[in-house]
Amino acid sequence: MKVKDLMTPAPKTCSPDGTLAAAARTMAGQTCGALPVVDAGRTVAMLTDRDICLALAREDRRPSEMLVEEAMSKGLHFLGKDDPIGRALQLMRRWRVRRLPVLGKDGSLEGILTLNDIAMRAMPRGHENGGPSWDDLVRTLQAICERQRPAPSPPAPRKSSAPLPAHF
Image: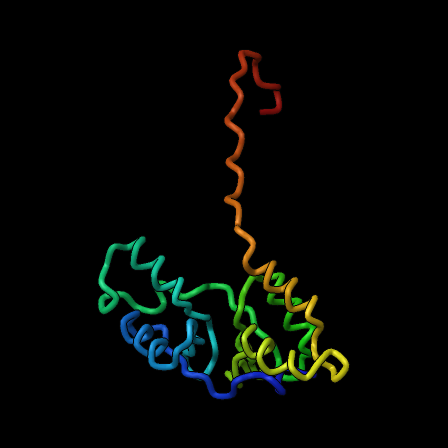
């Protein structure tokens, strides 16, 4: 089973110079939690409802005053339409994301694949018909939902009364 068998073609998008208010209205109208960010025909990022909430809280600004580019996820993780569904789940686990844009070789948006697409469309077909196993789906969901731990703080510099070596 391939990504193209399950992806949602032609998803709604937003542009980097659009406002967060407009992007949020698009998400609400589509009942989705993420939009691919497209600039000059190329997909450059993803914007999630979480990105919007965190940016607004961090900046303490109104959604109509903030641009998508100020909140969008900077690193773009994506799939190709001919990638196998197993690879999609593997990448979702690695990157801890529930949604991946499906891009053509030129960076153009061809669709979006969500964990929901896999659960609702692939799982009823069964593992025997090329779909992922339930175990694979559950492991992916567990990886995505695992709480992220903050990076450890660097150790405090040690105070030493010893003189520095001559090469310093």
